[in-house]
Image (cartoon, rainbow, N blue to C red):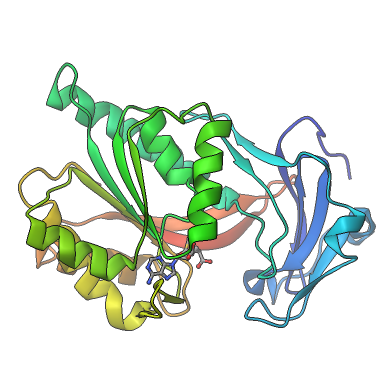
Length: 296
Ligand SMILES: C[S@@+](CC[C@H](N)C(=O)[O-])C[C@H]1O[C@@H](n2cnc3c(N)ncnc32)[C@H](O)[C@@H]1O
């Protein structure tokens, strides 16, 4: 199968519980539970992978061959949509590499929402965005590139350092971004006590996670109380809310209900919900998480 080596990302094929992706010049073969029951469509192209991630993502996985045998000197993911950004890539022990390309549509939506909110606020004002579970900064940087002031929260210092590096790569080092290593729930509780308010909240929580002091995050237990806090933190000036996740048992309808119930206390303010997906070079869609956006 042909692929266009100039595009920054291609999903070359998926099936049998794996996905084959090209990030810049590097083709990777990684686990993908969403492709468990689907057949591979292009068996011949899988030999182009320079590395596979084998084993579980939760601790005992490994790259084969090891990254030192294939990692290029410079390896970046570029997004050139409404919010142009650059993310440094690196093979991590989790099987992740520092970018979730399926978030690209959300990055563009965020940039549009910030543009509109800035217009409403008027000359010189910056939309104040809180980004929770902010990872390597894709959403932070798309908001900042559109002119937001962003508070970026993640539990892992190393991840926040990478996000800061990505801001520099994306020429946003001087943007008004506060980089904070904190537990998401604790930070929101403290912000509420301090009386701080935000125009917008973005959150992409994992199924399970840990704050920097071992605070336990379980999406099924903690998402609703966290969204209630997000509702209170945006009560006086809410412009937009975006929540996405990739967790068993939470489809678009469930996530939309969480958002409506948590932020608004009722379903009277419905969110726009849908699936995040990656499109393969031959046009097939690979489900890659769900989102709920308000306003719809
Ligand atoms: C981007 S989210 C998950 C992304 C994707 N939806 C998935 O399920 O794989 C992962 C980020 O959340 C952060 N995280 C996990 N638990 C956290 C917590 N309690 N407070 C703040 N950040 C947390 C991690 O450090 C990581 O950078």
